[in-house]
Amino acid sequence: MRHRFHALCPYFAMFPESFAETWIERLTKPGDLVLDPFCGRGTTPLQALLMGRSAVAGDINSVAYCVTKAKTNAPTLAAIRRRITLLESRYDSAIWEKERLALPQFFRWAFTSETLRQLLYLRTILSWNSSKTDCMIAALILGSLHGETLHSDSYLSNQMPHTISTKPLYSVRFWKERGLRPPKRDAFELLRKRATFRYESPVPDKVATVFHSDFRNLPGFFKTRSSRPRCVITSPPYFDVTDVEEDQWLRLWFLGGPPRPKGGNGHGDYRHDSRAAFWDFISDMWRSMGLLAGKKTNMVIRLGGKSLDPTEIVEGLKATSIFTRRKVNLVSQEISEIKNRQTNSFRPGSKGLAFEVDCHFLIN
Ligand SMILES: C[S@@+](CC[C@H](N)C(=O)[O-])C[C@H]1O[C@@H](n2cnc3c(N)ncnc32)[C@H](O)[C@@H]1O
Image (cartoon, rainbow, N blue to C red; front, side, top):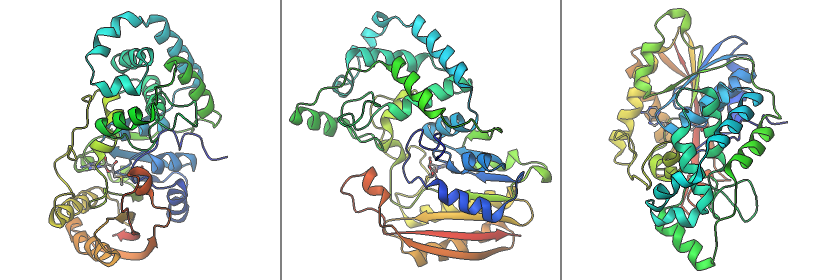
């Protein structure tokens, strides 16, 4: 059975666990350290733990951090059940009414009044940054916050895609035109059900170190030679493909963000603007890898972009690898046409990605 933590919450431009599994198997031995500095939903570190490796991961995005931390530092099911019971016993619906009324109209169309009051309470009370039990509970909510309610009772919202949060005006128009009302859901009850489902897979024996951080801060963590990774398996942000902050705005709201999409990538430092900015970003990635990689470190990169062709991607990666200030060899490259385009499920009807490139480098 596929490990149930893998699909805890979907993520934009996520890669399948088979990608991580293949490369971990090929390039590492049990006990080796695997790093993913752009970990997204945490597939590389979780798969590494499941295969007896150690793992370090990082991501600048709160949703990515929360989901990765939850699945690689999982509490016991008993601890989650106890915490849900405590949270429920302390919940006082009336307290949250004023805050509910102050939210934009999107929220009143997306959730019933009671579900929304529960979400406001949980969003305030969960210490997902510091407690592993609260982190898993927050990740379970993120995975159930919105989705195809007409076909499943696993989601808290009115009909929405599970993958991305649609924009407020579009969503409200969509619901009004179709006469769609939010479903009656009890967040505590749903949490218990989803936790039981996810924990049908055993919790990994080991835990990963996860950073909520820009990748440029990672070299400071790998101070001693023995702490350095043997292998990096990662997928940096793609050129001109998805806007992290916008596509996940509702999940980011649950984790403490504003009640509307922010627009822009929110980090102000990469890709949508120009090719030059994108390759500067990738140069920074190489610079950091040069500082933290051990001797003979394998680095597998999956990369794509709507307006970059595969040759430009491979040549760009090779050219920017000089920023490691180390000798770097391209060992193999594989170009795949994306038939089942992931971006289609992120932005229905969008042109999507034509190609992805997998490059395996050796940093000497
Ligand atoms: C292509 S996605 C990775 C998806 C991941 N492989 C998965 O399967 O879910 C790229 C990730 O890079 C993260 N990111 C963007 N800029 C970053 C930065 N400066 N430092 C660390 N992470 C960053 C984004 O938040 C996003 O999660």
